[in-house]
Image (tube, rainbow, N blue to C red; front, side, top):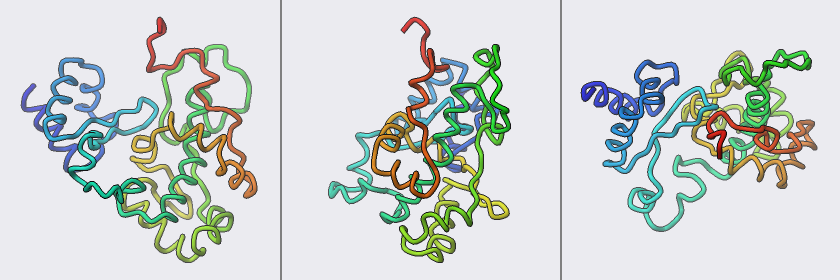
Length: 232
């Protein structure tokens, strides 16, 4: 087990993220002893495993008490410790809203992107789906047309901002489409962001551009979440 722990820890640090389907990752998610030791090793260097059961990948991130020692005490990193400008952070949240909010609603209600709207009496028994089955892409041209002028210009968004988000692992660009990247759902906290987006100013901005957000946090319509104890 020690060799596998060492290997998984090294791979996480080298790659920043790994798919949930990875053999070692799957063991970390189901083997309590293995997970506890992995957490201990990451904790020893100020890191933690970022694991969201609705995300298709896992990643590593800093523990909260390491933010100041690593990034400095000036708090300049509060908006972004990845070197993102305000416009780039705004674009990231817009992309997150248009991809992850509807995706989470499909996951919680066990619907898929090609669902015809008919009720499935056994839907609650389905495992949580990941990937293209529930995560729909965005047209890059439409996104730029709707929000480009608000974010510094269409050329800037197309040639620089989207490329930066892709290099960081938040999105993938395929044939004119923007697809969810490995970090989009795991690095941004849905429980914190969803309510702020749905009931905040961004909801009006999205609606004005023809992208209405869900009326409620997807978890509010779920009786019991897959990652919760039914007795809680």
